[in-house]
Amino acid sequence: MQIEFKNLYFNYNNNSEFKVTVLKNINYLINKNNITAIVGKTGSGKSTLTELINYFLKPTSGQVITDGFISENSTKLKFKVVNKLRKKIGYLFQFSENQLFEDTVIKDVSFGVKNFYPKDDGYEQKSKEALRLVGLDESFDSRSPFDLSGGEKKRVAIAGVIAYKPDLLILDEPTAGLDAQGKKEIMDLFKKIHETGVQIILITHDMNVVLEYADEMIVLDNGSIQKYGSPKEILKENVEKYNLETPHIYKTINALKEKGIVLNNVTDIPSLVTELKKHG
Amino acid sequence: MNEIIKLKNISYAYSNTRDALTDINLTINKGEDISIIGHNGSGKSTLAKLIAALLKPKSGNLYFNNVEINNKNTNLIRDKVGMVFQNPDNQFIGITVADDIAFGLENRRIPRDKMSQIIEEYSKKTGIYELLNKEPATLSGGQKQRVAITGILAMSPEVIIFDEALAMLDPRGKNEILKLIKDIKKNNSDITIIRITHDLDEAFYSDRIIVLSEGKIVNDNTPTEVFKEEDKLIKLGLDLPFIVKLNKELLKEGLIDKAIYDFDLLIEKLCK
Ligand SMILES: Nc1ncnc2c1ncn2[C@@H]1O[C@H](COP(=O)(O)OP(=O)(O)OP(=O)(O)O)[C@@H](O)[C@H]1O
Ligand SMILES: Nc1ncnc2c1ncn2[C@@H]1O[C@H](COP(=O)(O)OP(=O)(O)OP(=O)(O)O)[C@@H](O)[C@H]1O
Ligand SMILES: [Mg+2]
Ligand SMILES: [Mg+2]
Image (cartoon, rainbow over all chains, first blue to last red):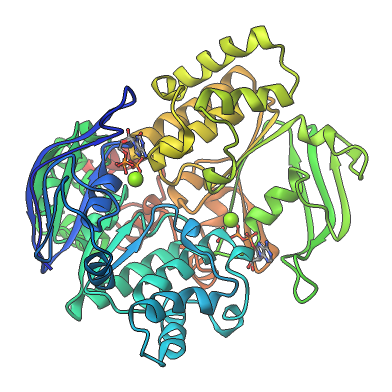
């Protein structure tokens, strides 16, 4: 799905004394075949930027073009148009447990399927499949989504956005609150979904995740895009100034390099150890 | 050592079908810095809420400063234990950030004239001074978590529980808060810290780790001991911190002869 930002400016409360300038002159075309990571410090505008893609917010000026739909300040959003777009997008909120609202888990996950495909009577099957994929067994189906642990709620919310099989997944901090293995399993699941042709936009503070899973990254700071490109390249440089942290493996290589040991072709611990052995 | 919290044979169930916690025995000493880890749904938040007297055990006894807690004296705990919740939205009540912090102070009967000074001091420490007049609902995720943390720290509790409270902070912000916690402990070594976290790198640097699985304590030991049992941890839905994984591989390949968990020292050793 083509997503483009053109001379995009965004302020909250634009016409009042509480005006907050968040995005300043953003110009960018997101590569539709990628897993794209949006990163940057707290308050840098990541969630705001992705909410603009999904028409939750309207530009103060400039344009956001999502799948051919143009959103600008003067656009009157028609329900039909918005609905058609949202059907194609699965949006996982940063505090995703706030997006749960039905009285059972299965109803909650089914909501998207029923809402966007009212004629589809396979919604229950689709929802069950999604729940099993995020690691929740049958015993969860009839429970209330409010009576779950934090990570269980997160998994229900994730099941809810993948169940109706959207073309684009926007995931705001999808791994926060998941246990170590859940984090890996869920990221692997997103990768698998991506391989079936689904586009993914991911917001995260975890640069290890970015390095392992993303094809493209955008660094936001001070309202604009400071850097963009391949995570393998960008994360090698100094990212601390954007409040980010160099991934573990790069931190290790850099520290060794400073002491005179230069290693090539290292992507993980096993390859690091192999190269170190070669080095003697 | 002085014990501050003791749980004796505590069980808890949200519904009558299944226990969320079963037969928990646990003693926490004054001044300890403990991490509680465990898979999703293992009972960490439930345990935290029991310790903070926000939930009442189904059976068993809870002691705070050697006093048994019952229906009538939960205030003994509530005045001394501060808990930062997993989802900050559940914690906000004030119209502005400043109001919100003030509300907590009011509950602890802090005199009004002292309040603004405390709010200023702590909001500067946590980097939210500029946000004091904003509505909590209009903050970014990381800003919300900082505000929630500030609200609890400002009350100067004796026991501070962080339930996944740093998960949405950017890495630098997270390190700043970790450093702030360290400083608080440096100033008063009697402060007890309980962190519930899925960040195993963070847990690795606490004094003691408690591992929960399916409502039971399955391990309670020092971080190096806990992370020795890789297979067991993987079975429990967990993993090893990066530094432990790295050491393990290096040991296996004979590149070092004993584990070094300090990153800089490890690098030095490898360069020799
Ligand atoms: N509804 C709102 N009204 C006013 N200001 C807002 C609103 N929502 C967000 N802001 C402000 O806009 C800025 C950008 O917020 P945003 O949520 O996009 O940040 P973020 O990059 O997602 O941060 P985080 O990593 O902390 O979630 C912040 O300074 C925030 O306080
Ligand atoms: N309000 C509730 N009503 C019923 N059951 C609940 C409720 N809250 C939690 N549970 C259940 O109790 C168990 C323990 O939940 P708890 O929230 O303590 O887990 P946790 O270890 O904090 O998990 P997470 O890492 O996902 O936050 C889980 O099986 C969960 O489904
Ligand atoms: Mg955000
Ligand atoms: Mg929890």
